[in-house]
Image (tube, rainbow over all chains, first blue to last red; front, side):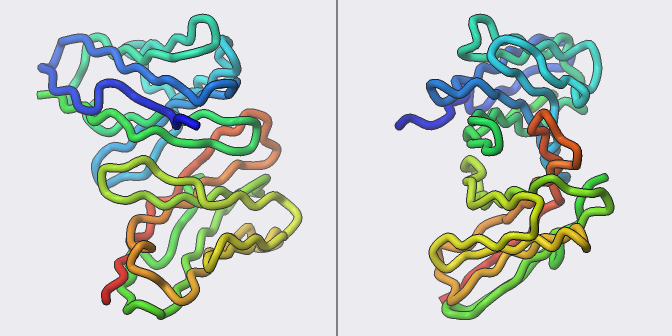
Length: 111
Length: 112
């Protein structure tokens, strides 16, 4: 069974630019989560989808972040415009209720 | 709200045992344990639900003390492959979303 995949694995952009991260969950998983780990800190929750609906977006830092999950399959996380403090590793996880399987993450560097 | 993990780092020789603790100031619905190797995805180890159960996974087991809101991960007869960073993710009661709040991680290094 294929795991959670994320694209790209790395992204380096300049402050003010836009970046879109993609997550493909494990097939059949209704729950999809986004997390972020800033260097040296803990993994922090961003938001949770159930199918295409946002269940909880309490962790989204501000309105520069926009997440979508059209059709309840893959999800995208757009950062526009990117700021220096957005640098970090963005993880996606999917699962049935109660378990979360993580993808390898996208390392975002904002210069 | 963030759970506290201890110790922050531990170095072991192959075959030695280790315990990693995860303590929360909030009532917990569940505790999830993950291991992450550098540059890779965090790997799900196990989940413990409210009820104080203990689970095992090969030579890795964990317990959940509901009264203390604390979970402990036990690594027995450690192997080189156990090296990595261990995270506990807590689901605060009453949870209905699955949102996990993670500890800061415990780095484990197993030496030959």
